[in-house]
Image (cartoon, rainbow, N blue to C red; front, side, top):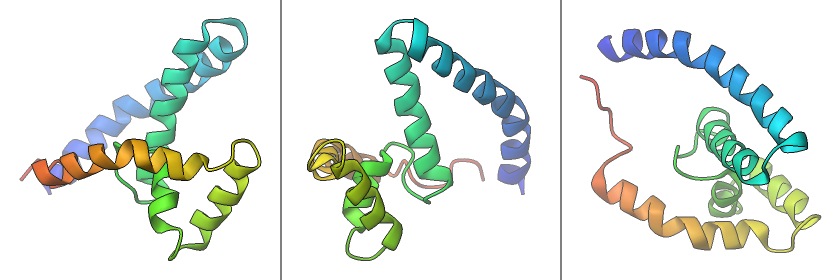
Length: 115
């Protein structure tokens, strides 16, 4: 129960900042430094992967899709879609991110933290 209460309180603060962050990404993406927008998009990618696709918070949607390609229809769609822009994007993302995923699992960072 503590974890749910802490999560609710945290989300009350984080969601408004996330909306502001999204607006900043849009603004910076068109008018500012590409590096700043890229960092924000990467963080948003990880957030969506964790919340929408039930993936790891430290993994991109692309890498997650590559891991799930044989089991999930959404993963095959993501792979097809990204291949339209960059061939083998998901495979390369997974190759780059899988050592990090393995380390996080080894260290137990996916386990509950508030008890």
